[in-house]
Length: 288
Image (cartoon, rainbow, N blue to C red):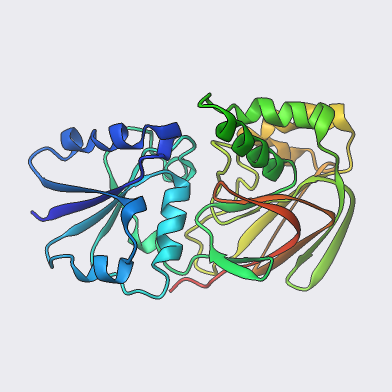
């Protein structure tokens, strides 16, 4: 029986991260738990070197918390078991693993190896779930603005509907998959996925498997339709049945995918927003 070094994110779950992490006292009753605010860790090399041999590392937060951890520790050797406990608002990795919020922590270190790498504006980072581009990036942009203005809970579905009807305009897109280019005159969104879920339960590429040994990723393009038709199709992305609309939805899988828009728009990586993006490239990594 080892000790759990718990790195929790107070900002996760719309600011409920600290309280949510305290639920681990019940879930891991009888274990020794040491809590530390992950936002206060300034030197991961020093932190990891200070773990005792019998320690377990546990990340308590949302998808963005886990993304930040794997990127901040890139190049460092992980010699301890890594557990994850979902306290975010979306929890898409948790959902992809077939788990519900409140379930006990599970080990994830194998899932954090050989992750896809996305390059945006000359900077590269690893991806846990996926990269959203188009109206999904727009939703994150608006959500960030609303969060900065007040403490209200963000409803991304409502933002998407308002965007489709009034504010967001489709772009011309060129999607290149392993060297083969596909052009779309009216693209509404073009996310590339490592897992199945993003955006709090949307399933743009229902056949994508984060454990596939080839390490391929999948891109979905919703395109070619007007506002009302797109609005009719959009809700089915939560069940993955949108892919049946083959005239409006295209899905491709490959090892390297580049998406280019003809005007800048927002992009999100595991929920973190990057503004004014005209293209991104994501490369899958083979898994041993």
